[in-house]
Image (tube, rainbow, N blue to C red):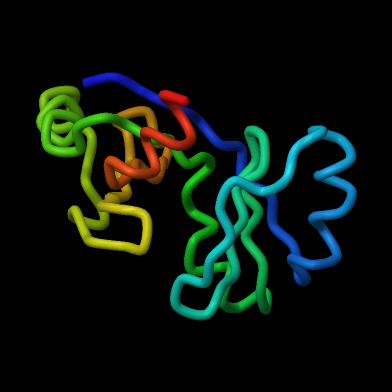
Length: 125
């Protein structure tokens, strides 16, 4: 299992308002932009911007980072062997599969295994 990318999470009320400054700071356009349930998401540089009403964002606030891995099943086994708790089991989403885990030290992370097309476009290109 390999970590392919790690995103710092940024929380905002308005994605369209947040992106111009991040575009200027990173020198890049968003790699991804989508809606998941009732929040808007954009990946730009090493940031994952999560936008929407505070109550909706709060549903995802327990995770401190989003980490893209190449094999979610191997990751889950590694996490269990390290006494981590999988708080949200592997679930399909718009970019592939994801799970949430609380490490034995209390850190909570969202882990994502992207579909091959995204890995090719955003990691291997």
